[in-house]
Length: 262
Image (spheres, rainbow, N blue to C red):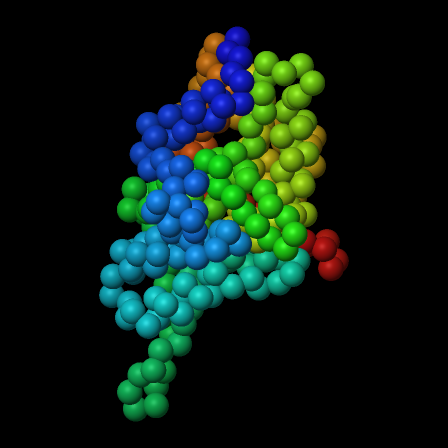
């Protein structure tokens, strides 16, 4: 059985992601006061330059002004309600962003701008960032690892120390619930959440309670992984391989409505 302390688990997580093709970035390096800043403020959770560059790459025939309008629509919070905000972004991500452009002879056609390249996953900008400080209101939080696709934080990972008997995977789940209250802007773009204490690993949706956070038992989708393999490594290789991640975002996220609740 593998036992990692928190810093070792973070390093291992980043190494596994790097093996899948993700660029690995230190959060402090791209902070507003970092050596290579990619954010104007600590409140920003979208890496706008990466988003803009990815949209241009994925939508090469779309005019620059239209791309810029798409960037603004993606970055804007649609609702103060975290779940509705997440639902609205998911629709943009899967259906495309429809933008009306000025045409000729009074005809103003609508064009679609696509956020992710689902057909060619490696065409997306893939990166993982550790220790990404976010300040929202009076809250200052720093999730352990964020997975970004095209400058958008689609996966939040919270890691705990297996060598500390007073801490377990429930503490990681509870920490994410704190983040949802304190820094809700982060979760507009979220596809799923991952928790681990270095021995156990669980994955759940944005709305899942702790009982609905589950193991991921396979890498290839056909056979169960060996119990000797670290659960978090199996989960990363099984869910965050770029093609599989794009498949999950496109086809396996469902919003159900019960009356006025989503």
